Amino acid sequence: MLPNNPIDPMMGNYELVTLRGGVRSIRSLIHGETMHVGTDPCTEALELHVGQQKIVKRVLEHQVTHPASPFVIWDIGLGPAANAISAMMALRDALQTRRENGDVETSQRVEIHSFEISTEILEFALSHADALGYLSGWESTVLALLSHGSVEVDPSIRWRLHRGDFSRESHGAPSPNAIFHDPYSPARNPEMWSLETFASEWMAVVDREDGKSGPCMLTNYTRSTAVRVTMLLAGWFVGKGVPTGEKSETTIAANSVELLDAPLGREWLSRVRSSTNASPIRGRNYERGPIGPEDYAKLCKLPQFA
Ligand SMILES: C[S@@+](CC[C@H](N)C(=O)[O-])C[C@H]1O[C@@H](n2cnc3c(N)ncnc32)[C@H](O)[C@@H]1O
Image (cartoon, rainbow, N blue to C red; front, top):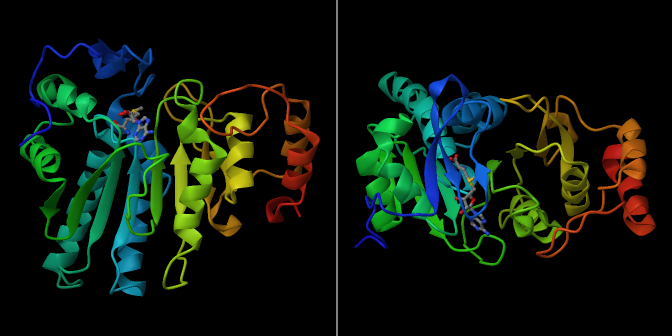
């Protein structure tokens, strides 16, 4: 049984919009935000998350270095699934070639764990799959995910759905190798950009039962100083991310500074000190303000700036 009728075109919280270049995307009327502005859904997914994190290369390497454990992707804020589907499309061909060459066992898997508080947007997207383009051919897979919470996309790829508020629920998903962090903006969705939420992602990476924390990267679309300060204080190493769409810069974080091409340096700290919006985001309220002396002192002592 589906939670809601997945193809009810009368749902009123979202609308289809036409982006520059004629590509279609979705606008949330509740949050007043359009997804993937300045590009199309899959281009942003490929540039910001899949390409920047070198997902295909890292999965192929992981299968050699960690043959017994799956490569785990956390897709936080599944939404209309452009990030998850773009990643799976990029991986499917590469993994199939490997299987055909006999280079890998089919039991060596990629697991995509998608987190979503409400699947209404995905159900809306499904009812407009032709207009959106990237969902064409994925309808039955998405329906199976919505119905069963888990679907085998390919002999090497398992897609799981965790329903609920990511910032509150304990979900039991395995430790991630890659995180696509893609909620609405900090102003509209502060609990997903808070110190507590980034710290829980950090703990999932570093506090593994087997004590072996492999490389993990986290990408998101903002370049906000307050968000970067929050991620750093939560434990992450943070760097400048690639441009995408109308954004000249985004943010990438990792569990080791060596994984970053452009880590934030000490010169960035002077920008933090003079910014009117550099206070870390705490709890569920978004309060803009300059960083306090205690937080600034903690920031300066982090290994990234030593
Ligand atoms: C910008 S959309 C995601 C776009 C999507 N990643 C894609 O690739 O198409 C943000 C999504 O985050 C979800 N979200 C917001 N707050 C959340 C929370 N606390 N827990 C889980 N999901 C949340 C929203 O419901 C929405 O679907």
